[in-house]
Amino acid sequence: MLTVTNHASQQDISGLAKGYGNWWSAARQISRWQLLTAEGIERAWAYGTLAELELLGAIFGHKEHDADSIKKEIARCCQEILEVCAPDDFQVQSTMRQFRRYVDIWPRPEWIDLARTALAVLGNKKPGAIGLKDSLDETGKDKDME
Image 1 (tube, one colour):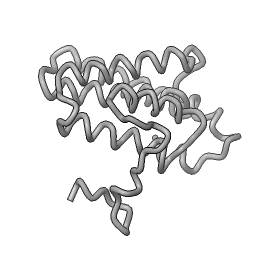
Image 2 (spheres, rainbow, N blue to C red):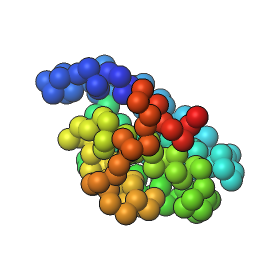
Image 3 (cartoon, helix red, strand yellow):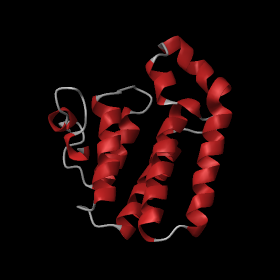
Image 4 (cartoon, one colour):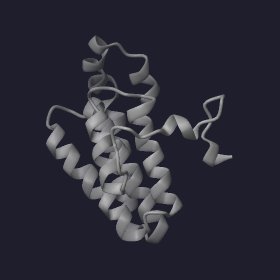
C-alpha cells in the first residue's frame, strides 16, 4: 500500500480509497481478529500493525474516518503496546522507527501528524526532529537491523 502512495500524485490520492480501500479494510479486520487471541509480545506486534493500518486509513479508509478519530485510535494502540512492553524493548523501538519513516522518509500531509501522535505516545521526545536518517547507512538500510 505504501508503494502506491509514494507514486501517487496529490490528485491520485483521492482515488486510492476506492481502488485499495477494501484491501485496507481486510488487513485492518485481520489485525483486529489477531488481537482476540494474541498475548504478550504478539499482542504488542498486533497493536503496532493496527496503529500503522490506522495511519494508512488516512488515505485508504473511507470518508467516515476523520483525523481526530484516527489519532485517538493510534494513540490507544500505542498505549496498549506500552502496557505489554517497556519503552526500551525492541517492539517499542521498532514501532517508533516505523512511524519515524512516515515523518522523515515518506512524509505526506495526510499522515505526518498521525505519525507524530504515535511517536509522542511511544516516548519520542521531539517528534518534529526525529533523526531517523542518522540511523540509516549509506545505502538507506536501517543500521539497527543488521
